Image (cartoon, rainbow, N blue to C red; front, top):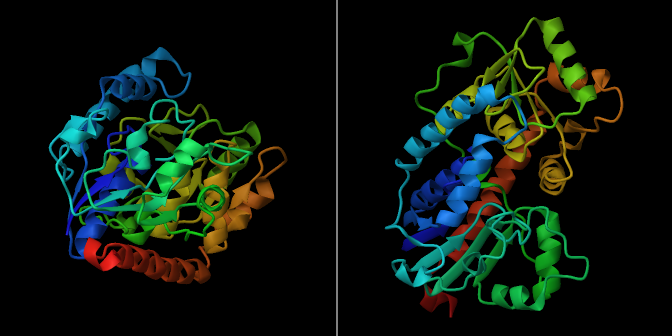
Length: 357
């Protein structure tokens, strides 16, 4: 089938890049001809680039490094399998497809600062007889009284829906009065293969620090553990005051290799945990309010609830216990089972429209 994938594929964000790339390549591995729908918006570009140039309130001296990071992302975007570009607000200009897969990412987050409330991600104007949502998420958006009727009505037009977290499943259940499956992020369903990455034995050990807004307690505990080991703490993608080294301008492929070869991972990000699981790296995560929902669901899926810690109390014992030990074999067993069910969802959803009818 000719498939278009609709997601946030041009975000200056390692997780967004890799989940887009892994999903389109994963659909190819299932025998389909898949591309990313290359939507464009000056408004969104301005917001995205402004955030990328100053993602955290650090010194102005880091601005050139963030600019180089953006350039590496632009270079990586050029290597993605893309459709002809079309305006985000004029979907009628996109090519027609046999099926369109919306997701993964916070594509239904109505509170997203620049992608929120774009009807296209809810299916409006998609040029395909078959519409599927894979690992879609409402992110941190919360609707105590359920999803607004106008947005809920749009979900009825999807032929098959899966989500990435339990909170999103509850919102869809309230909107459609039906249960939908929770599937894996594409980076775990169709994990990236890093042919050019150096072997871990060839790289001196280090702690990969990925994220920002760490609590002082978390920072002290991770740094103390790293010092006892004699390992440097290297912050990737963002400036961190307590890291030994900064690698702000890493590109998406450098990020993946960096995570693959880390001795341990400390993060506040969902994809920090995803890549630690993908490469079997010991990790500890401090969940923020913004990312707590999806992190708790991911950890529940793999049985890793203890890897989420609360920075409001002394954490030395928790960090030492989590980073000293290899990941349990049960994690890989659970991920393998979830991979099978996630791929099964896509195979069954991507039947020809005549078969669905």
